[in-house]
Length: 157
Image (cartoon, rainbow, N blue to C red; front, top):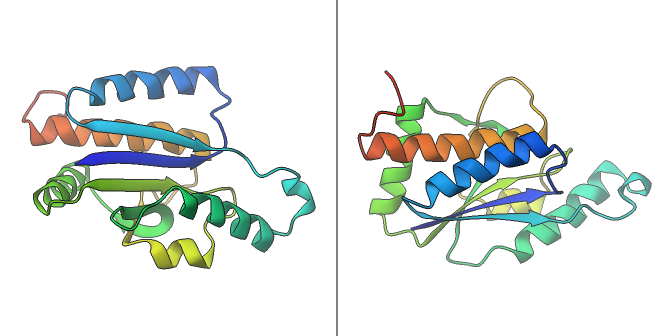
C-alpha cells in the first residue's frame, strides 16, 4: 500500500517543514509515502467561502484517481487512539488498498464534491490547529502507527 497526503498551500514555517521532512524520511523505511502540496488559490480573498471551497475541491479531486481510498482530515471525523489508528492502517493494508490518500483541506474545509468522493473522515482532535500543524501531526501519527504495527519501541503504552 502507498500513502499519500494532499494539502492545500505550502508549509511556510521552516521548523514545521523540517519536522515533517524528518517523519517522511522515517516513514520511507516502512511504506511509500508521498506528500503533495496543492498550490493556494490565486486571489482567494476575492472569492466567497463557498467559491474557495469549490475551487480547492476541483484541485483536490484532480489529484485523486478512482482506485484511491480517500480519508478527509475533518473536525467531524472519527477520533482514534494511536493504537486504534495503527489497527485502522493495518486493516487497510490487509484489504489490498493500493493507495490510501489523506486530505487536508483549506481554511474553510471541503467542498460537497470532495465529501462525496471520500470514503471516510478522521479527526485528529476536538481542538482546532493550523493546517500547517496538522501536516506534522498526521505524518507523525502515520509513522507512530507503523512503529506500533512493527512492535517497535517508539510508542509507549
